[in-house]
Length: 226
Length: 353
Image (cartoon, rainbow over all chains, first blue to last red):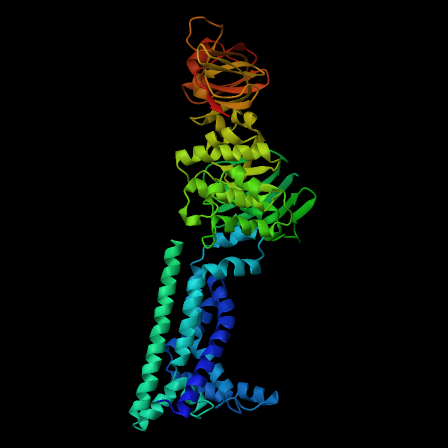
């Protein structure tokens, strides 16, 4: 069954995906809201940047991140200046990389959900004395609930499934930066097919169940609202 | 509380330039054809058009000038949108609570608002399970529960079929009678306005074309309202008595009496009667040789040519203004001119109670 190294890879993966998802929701929500409402010319640029991870090979992103997070890169030297260590090959580095890599998977569903909300609801809320922030929590969030659910699950699942970026910036340090996808790769390299099966099958099942949950829930939500 | 408006707004192919003072009480109709800027003006008052220039003062409070722009959620107004716009994630009750929770004061209780709009049986429903008329009543109750200083209504009836319209109108009237809150009511239907409004502001192409008391505006020959095919004047009357033999109801007003088919109304009740200009004919003397019951003594105030064949005559019966549309030929033969005393025969009246 699962070895200790596999269990710790599982733990690191879940920790990484959860933390990344939380951070992405915090960053992605205002960003998606801005994208949905702005008429600024900068919108196209921001949208393009957010979507870059969708088209770039993970190794490209990983390469630049490796440089940025390393001792001579801007992020790495900032970390050193603040009394820390360079961030390449650390769990923090993995979180930063994952946030960037999974950004479109969180922003795009939210963007879509926000765009679909008619301006009239916001105006109505305003005429009922709801401040913009109040309106966001009492009207927009509930109306965008399917979008939030999709964003959460896609962000989480995509982080669990990432490989290239992690390999580039996290290396493969068991117990510290080795995640499931890389552990599977290692097992296959070493012809340990049984263990690879356990991990790969588990991951497949987990991802499938999460997606079924999203689609079921979103459909129920839609039906109730129609 | 008066509403002093001085707005300029430039949009792509439309400009609004309005300077007017809205009366402190009653229902004021903002009337005009589609695209004349009625809704935009309402939105400016609510603070929903941030690019509007100018000033807005409500009572003693400045809501907008060169330096101040009070955001919409800090303006104590109630807004009923054309399509009701109920929150789909909340039940009817939830929608009402949304307003109640955020009201800074409570000038009307939950139960009052609910009974005034007749929605008690709908409270637990989802908003998606309501008819058009029900949606508007919920939106109205919700707006009232935010305890507004005045109510803005943007064509609340226009999306409704005839039957739902007839159902909703009495609620708006009741509102008018029960609450002292002034209402600005956007409409492009002359019948609706004749039905509800006390005053009118007439808009055309983003400009105020005229404003004043409703009866004055409807019969003003220099304004387009009198020229409409369904031009109408109104008579404010009181139910005087019922005649059970002939199944008639007698209404009394300052200029005389109006008879109509028996209506179930209590004696002494105030009612409004609408008379279409095409349903008034003029005679020089009272004649026994007519089947028309309603003959009112009037004085001609003004005559104006409508087209090659017809003229409009503005009439005064005591203090009530009436409008008649007759042929040029009759006007010439009868020598109808300002100051002439004659009789208006009213063929059909429609009761607005």
